[in-house]
Amino acid sequence: MSQKIPTRLYLSEDEIPRAWYNLRAVMKDKPDPILHPGTLQPATASDLEPVFCKECVKQELDETTPLIPIPDRLQEFYRAYRPAPLIRAYFLEKALGTPAEIYYKHEGTNTSGSHKLNSAAAQAYYAKEEGLASLTTETGAGQWGSAMAMACAFFGIGLKVFMVKVSSEQKPYRKALIETYGANLIPSPSNTTESGKKILAENPDTGGSLGCAISEAIEVAVKTDKCRYVLGSVLNHVLLHQSIIGEEVKAALDKYGVKPDIIIGCAGGGSNLGGLIAPFMGDKIAGKSNTRFIAVEPASCPSLTRGRFAYDFGDTAKTTPLLRMYTLGSGFIPSANHAGGLRYHGMNSVLSKLYRDGHLEARSEVQTDVFKAAVQFAKIEGILPAPESSHAIKAAIDEALECKRTGEKKVILFGLTGTGYFDMTAYMSYNAGTMGDRIPSDADLERGFATLPDIPQNQHTSP
Ligand SMILES: *Cc1c(COP(=O)(O)O)cnc(C)c1O
Image 1 (cartoon, protein in one colour):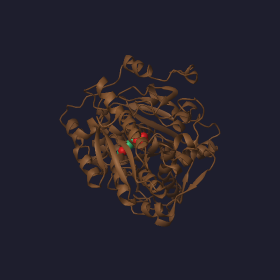
Image 2 (tube, protein in one colour):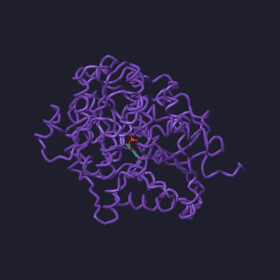
Image 3 (tube, helix red, strand yellow):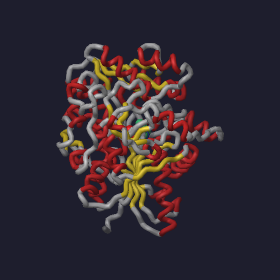
Image 4 (tube, helix red, strand yellow):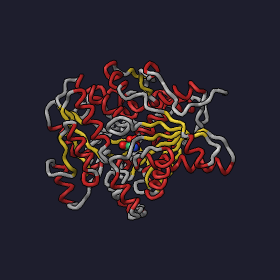
């Protein structure tokens, strides 16, 4: 390979992928099926359709179609902000003095500020096509709510957003952004739903969690005519939509003959990581590469590194179908970590299966170390990263420093999932030296595991 790698590895509009990559279709060992919580039988489309849009349900259950076409109108929307830049981190490599090559895919260039718009647009598009009048959803840090608000404004459909209360207080500008795009925002837990009232009665001072907000949003969706619920992570159809990230990266790297040795992503519910690694993991499963994949999660919410592989609910009120995943228990409420987008008790079932089978590695990081890496990256590469994304930055820097120690010239790729412009409260706390690290004790985790459903499938659940 003699061609000099440019700082930006461009793709033209014509090179944007026209179909999503369905990783499950190429997995030899499939993840366990979603179960109906009442019958404990595999969930069918008719079980899921009262809650989710029809097309999303179809995608959720599809484990055989390798490539799923992206509708034309959605491709047009994608072209307004894609391809997302793939950047060679020459400055960072030099500053670290590493022989490694470092690349990052920057998903923060759209106004919502993160990769979440890729799935938000798809879900709003399908809802509109189905003839629905409105959607409900939850948002943790506010990125998903912002993305959905943008997408619903574009495709012309109503939106109610339940925002985790601590985030709505930490991030008033996120709230304002969501409202500017026309969505109705309610801090969660709220007294507008039965599940919200119940959570408040048990725990009046709670700052909320993604799990609580999901319960409220589902409740409103099933009780409202022509309304469905949309979720921004965890589910397979969300990972499918995010596969455009990995497909673009692969197309651009292939153009320049670059093969990644290590791919790193932060992991909340797993959507960006699942999307980033999808085509590369497909190659690895097919025996065509030996890439390492690393999930990075917060030490305050360590689903992969300290969770149990079990069937669990996706929400605190235990209303969703059961997913077999690494989980801390749907009753686990993580401490108020600033990476709000990573405060989720479970992990997508495909990624959980890949981790279980040894195809994916995982590590956790404390937030002060993560912010140290974030500030270092901002100063060197110029981009102010989201706290969530900074977990991947931390791991990429560590891997590059390991290459410096061993002299290996590895190719490291990481997902820069978003920008941190709305996270200045977190940066202020880091700059002032008041940021702390709260790591759950084993006893805290046991309290979460005690909320796992007591069903035969969970009898041999191992740590
Ligand atoms: C939501 C979010 C994440 C985590 O969500 P995943 O579904 O795990 O990708 C990571 N980074 C940013 C910027 C986010 O908004």
